[in-house]
Length: 169
Image 1 (tube, rainbow, N blue to C red):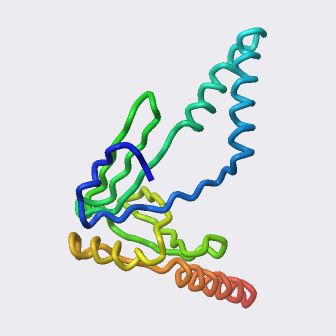
Image 2 (image 1 turned 30 degrees about the vertical axis):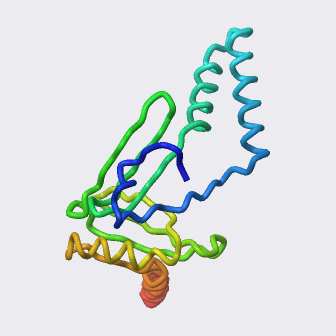
């Protein structure tokens, strides 16, 4: 997936996420054209803010994110060409993993990793779901694993019961 050296490349337990690109080739080319137009407008008009907007758009276009669930925890590496960031959520810091099957993403499972009050979500291959859970449980027995579908069904039932109880009053 990448031609750069990632922190988890030597980790045999590392399970890489699946990149889901929301942009197609046409929209990406269109975004580069808009970036160029905004830079030109910023240079030749009095609206200098468009240069800042163009640079932010360009930065979002060239940024690449890589994620893996490894023996260390959830590792996130971001390559922005001008700078690189690396974040590690150790397994001991992660409270829960919630999984959700997204209908329009065949063969992929959406995993939500929760650390305190922050949640990050990433797509993984459906076949890797159990491996991620095994690695997580082997490093932190306290991690809770939730099914998002089950949660949504319980929430729906709860809302219906609340409506019924309001009607009775």
